[in-house]
Each structure stands twice: as C-alpha cells, then as structure tokens.
Length: 174
View 1 (cartoon, one colour):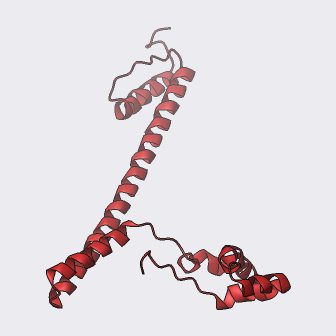
View 2 (cartoon, helix red, strand yellow):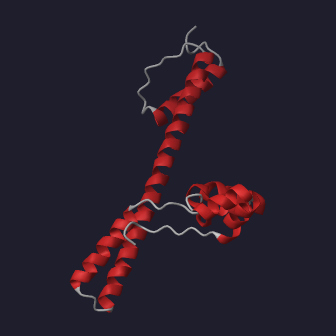
View 3 (tube, helix red, strand yellow):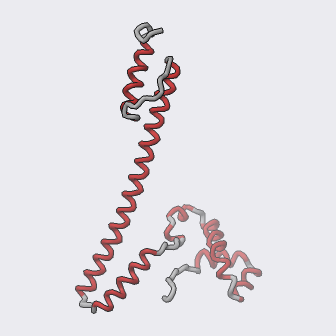
C-alpha cells in the first residue's frame, strides 16, 4: 500500500510523528515505521524520551540553582564577617585567623539535632521522649549513676531524656 493509498489516520500519525521527531531527534529519523501501530509506538517512545530528558534537565537545573544559592549565602556571610572585622579595626593577623576558622566550619557538614527537624514536633511527647532516649542512651549510659537509673526506672530515663537533657554539638577544640 502506497502512502497516498493509506488512510487519513496514517497520514495524521505520519505528520504528527514527523513533528515530534523534529523536536526530539532534530529530524534525524532512522526508524521507518511501516504501519499505524508502529508509528504510534514510535511517537510514544519519542514523547517519553522528550519528557524524560526534560525532567532530567529540570532536576539538574534545580540542583544547580540550589547549590548557587548556598554558595551565595556563604559568600554573603563571609562578606558581612569581613565588613564587621574592618569596622571593629581587627588586626589583619586576627582577621585571617577568624576568617580561616569560619571557612573551615562552613565547609564541615553540620550534624542535625532534633531542633533542626521540624517534623519531630508532630510526634507525641511519649514517642518523642522514647526517640530521644534511644538517641542519647549510648552517651548517657557511660555515667554510672545514669546507668543505675536506667536499670532501676526506665520511665525516669525517658522523662530525663525528653525534658532535662539538651544536646550541644561543639567542634573539636572548643
């Protein structure tokens, strides 16, 4: 069956296929479907490829934008620090030490505390204190008095972890 003798549906899908292939493969069509079903499958594959590549480009763009914003935030913080040091007439030697330590600490990954995770506020107080107990237990049980309290009354330990213990993370040397 020649192209002229094929039906309107085949003509429509041929035109649509040509249009989609211009968008995706730049007109470099190496697949030559012989019937409407093959052409429909080819169109589906081209559209799927277009959507996949678009999603990939979108995700990469979002990641690059986020990294750029983080870098700009760091640059702004360092700019404010330098301005502060200049305004306070800090000696160049001290200013270099301060800036070096700030840059080092900004480069380190910050460990999250429970205050940094807003979703934990949605937990019931019992579950939150149990979670804090599980997190803090290895550190607390190093002390003999707290180890004894853990063996005698687990509820007190949960209350202690939930209400009385606070976590303060300090860099080495502080």
